Length: 385
Length: 132
Ligand SMILES: [Zn+2]
Image 1 (tube, rainbow over the protein chains, first blue to last red):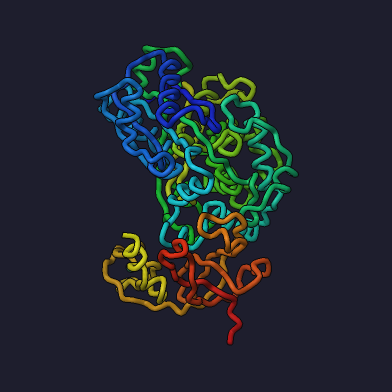
Image 2 (tube, chains in turn green, purple):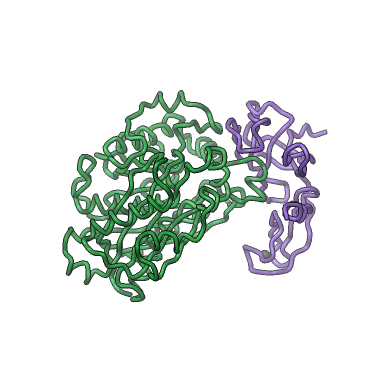
């Protein structure tokens, strides 16, 4: 297997991009990525997208996006793993290069969610759950994560305020990110007084509906050294895992097995432990998700996700910064783009180009992207070399 | 065809039928072709008692499409006597009064419908078990 580096990153602004279409945002992110890399070389395209069929009545993105990127005849494929589609697309691009099939592979994550109304968008997202045995019974993703929040609060004594602190922290970071959908600080009170969606989760516990795209260009370390434009960012570990699609079928709903196993595999491949990691971008689709992911990855002990957030352990200036980008909560969550955007943020931090939200001496990053209620997970370890 | 999509779930939804692995006795709901525990492909049908206790629940305030008129309503995970879990609505109670560990029992109820003239979907919902 060849060693692999990221030589280009690009993102659209995240938000309600009414003036732009699905193909427009995918192409914009890809072009920014190529400009950043300083090369036009692409041997293959991988698109990560969850549900353009339901959001935009458009499938066949491999052809659509590659054509509008001006790359007719280039090999292209789309991968889907619900909200983990983006991270899985980067993994596919990594495998293209590591295997020697491509020298330059671009991964483009995209989701254009505001072409339908909120109700239809929620319905599209619900297809990431078990359709016949979860969604059929009138539960949606806020509801599924609420089941986790209630169980976590009962078992570990996690408080309602601790959940809120995840959102407050991520908005504080997101306020420093020019790509954020909601670049504004909020208070604990904002969260606690927002509308109840599914007890105990309120509106400000939930990530928003977002349009956006992100892209990364991947090549071999050898090629990247030749270009030599930035501090070199290598992908030293990748781990993926799956779990039951239905939350109710897990032996212990509070154990996110897919996250734990994907993390273990990625760290093992990189020859590292979690203590070697300087910061993480994690999948905070709901506040409780970030708390549970911290525990599953071993960043904190089981049950300590809430207190760790409250005492500033995961803040931008804390011992282990989590979601310096603002996370899904503040930056926005265009589902297929999210996993790629996490890697863009990690690369930016490792290059030392994250401006006001720059983490000091960031050398090793972990990005964690998951589908549904944890039915799939992909984790990348990135290092500055 | 939409009718077939729901009709084929009838054993689970109307009669609470699960599969029991003929090798390791694991019970799966819904039924499966291969046992997730031991890989065996032979199952017998196991009718579930419909009695269990509440593992975790939530009250849906902003409901997904088709369920708006029902909100607020409770949805939870119930662990049945047979040791298998099920996700279900919990009804015939004030959702605010529910507590983890509450005994519940399955009833046959209407879940949803396709407008005024479309299909009506039936399945189990759970209610507090008064022990009668
Ligand atoms: Zn078995």
